Length: 285
Image (tube, rainbow, N blue to C red):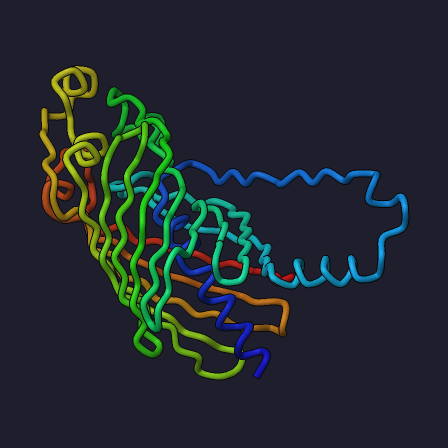
């Protein structure tokens, strides 16, 4: 029973972060390490045994997963060329309230029965014009911070969610996502998952990533194009998570995104269908 619970924790904690990495257009993943300062006063006089008990309880409230693997993704959103990248991975969860992973931080602010509301802090990776020859002359889309919220309702193995993310800096865009995720254990060791979602974007985001200004047109040779707000993309994914034991897991995931609307019609886009895949090995502390 313990293995089954832990495997569900693995699948849930890694799902959103893994998908964010899969559909990232950034050329690499950078993970920051926490610095821990130790005060020498803690050792003089010797601490009481009860202090160890409190420390152990605080550590037990954290669930940390470290891992790594590889992904294959388009060189940029709309490209027909692919790149394979190594992926280091870390996620930490505190009492199902705060989750920190490569996409940023999620903080639960309200929970009642199957309903949960969370605040989100993260970042938008932007895009480099040297990611592909197709982008030459378009300039870079700078990285920006994101703030947002997510509401989710759980129905058995399924979760229906809606989230909104605003970028500060970079594209200065606004993204909205509505979708469903299903996670179903087939045994104590094997869990399968599937997801589907649609993404909406405002005019700032669409113009930054899919529009071509007169200046960009002159530099790149692409036709001028004004990308309007609206439905941007539909995403579908399947995954399998296998627990080797209570600590080690292996996760495989495949997804496909389909660009629609003004995004699909952009002269920057070579292929509307955007497949991706990932293989990840993780260890839970």
